[in-house]
Length: 429
Ligand SMILES: *Cc1c(COP(=O)(O)O)cnc(C)c1O
Image (cartoon, rainbow, N blue to C red; front, side, top):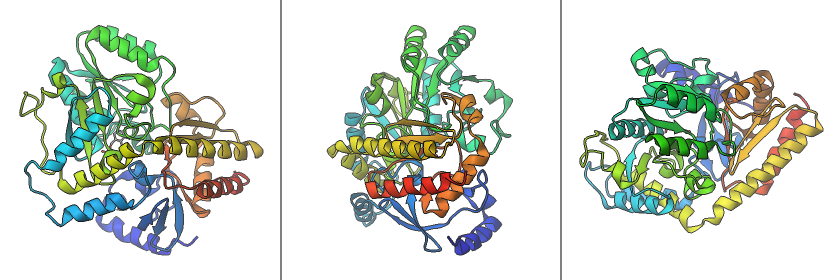
């Protein structure tokens, strides 16, 4: 493939944008080479500035669960634009999407819209602190909750890819309120809770992790956290920015049958527009301004275009719940195909999958937390795999620590093409 125009655009971009990108992972630094500049996309395909066509497994890092430029979403945005793009006042569509979200997601009474997953998680933790009157939080190594200060401590994919698990600029004061636990390790959580009994506001986690590859919670892990929280009054916060409206209509809470106290959303809920949200039962949400004392605000929060896109997306999913089963089956098909190909070529690997999230790790040991993910990452092999797939027209995330996202737009022919590409590439690994 030729990447001439992308390369020129990247040179230009680097002069006026740090690293040429507005979010670090896009720069391809972990895998080497230069990023592709995408010109347009439709359904399961991306088209770059050089005219290359790629089967997309990133899907804007999750939001495009129905594929790119999905017609009902595009139409909703275009129609809404005609009546003005932002008013800074309440609008009816905000209530509509809130009503639908509350209907789809178990265990929530109210939801507040923000502009990104980062904002959602940051606000959720402030709310948890305000509600409990406590300062500390427990987060898990390898879980990513956006780039706000409290979370930039062993923060998974983005940060890990660059070898800066703890970002400069995060003060010691902030860092000391974030207690770090190992994913899938209840004993570790119990120790932290024992040692900090009266000062923990919440435990926040990705209930199915997706930022150190895809890592499912072990049997009993989420149940155990729920129990600890029930016994201590600590709030359980599920960061469902990735899993929400993807692993089921009601996310992980529905899929695995565990209730959290506060939920964070992003990605799918915005239909590809900048949207995040956090939600909880009344008792907690009523702590938020203007009803309660915890301040949280946003000039563009609940923006009409963003809400139109999000509402169209959620409506599609709510009215066609068979989509969730269909993408799960497509992902399982891909899983089996990739495993077959890797086994045929004797490539040591582990594939993790939950629903439509899947990741391949080039090591043969089980991957269940940050350390095992990092240990099996065999970066040289992954980078070769990444570039090989790209040259064969398959666009996967440019980092060994990212999940692939399957969209409903992918056909079985696309999946076969992907498995064939993997077969070709596996020969070279
Ligand atoms: C992507 C992501 C975020 C951050 O969302 P942004 O919209 O990028 O700020 C937070 N938590 C999880 C689990 C994510 O995957």
